[in-house]
Length: 407
Image (cartoon, rainbow, N blue to C red; front, side, top):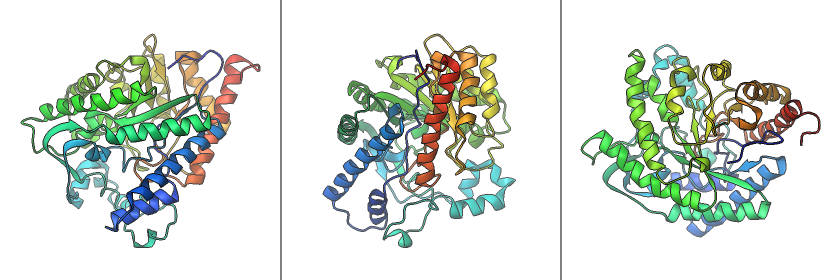
């Protein structure tokens, strides 16, 4: 990744709302109906071509495939790692409280949220009326029951689809998101003797996926929402030092997964959970920033439009961004259908540029717009309007930071 010399470039975190054709096929598969593999692959190629071309049309500088080839951002590895087994396991209702401790205080809200949030923005398709949304269904139905061995065929297919779409659209920079070892670790382990054995086996297997993406010429984006999320899932009310000791091991696993990959080909996305919920138990950026900077990556994508964390841009007045690193702050939210004004986006960008240098900032989103095929956070029209506003906001910021002659 190159540092800026004339303007603020734009990107996003990766997942985008799937096309109606892909959603229809996924619903059919979810309902147990037969889906023709050739028809699915054709819809996937068409969808990737369309989503890359749309990003290029509106002016996003660093594009991706919308993660269209994945069920969701975590358990897509159930189709790529031998040893992970697809099961019928489902989280029980009471286990949800362990994931979101806020439920003790906002239980009425959470019950309503889980009824309506997941599928409310799904594209209308013929099978939608038969589909009952459960936002946990496709996230927790994988278990590790054997030694982990990576199957490269699915990622090679995704790479081929993205390369074809990038070439057709004339895009010059592209990235591919992947899950971090510490986030896929949420998949239950029934094979390895210890959790750390399991974690580092995941890291070793993921290194193959990471290398294939970088060798294909794409920037690697590693997604690790569990790194911050486990603070409130497992360590709330306990000393921060206990959480940091646990998290240090997950960063070590990430660095092992990145072995042999140049730092300037990697960016790390860390968020506080994509759900549109109160977030009152989140850790602060100040709590975890030292930890994040230990990851061997050049870029850091961190939530900064989320109203629970927007003020934390000031942390960078206290913490020096290491030489050679880049910040890719979220200056547009993924969790509200309000479209941010370009002037607000420009202001947010300039705040960061004033602290870490204009050459070290890339404008991004807080998180993905649809972490799985069945979990769009906003309507697709709003998604594209937000990305258009992101591009315009970056242009305004560039004029301020470089003068009116800026591109």
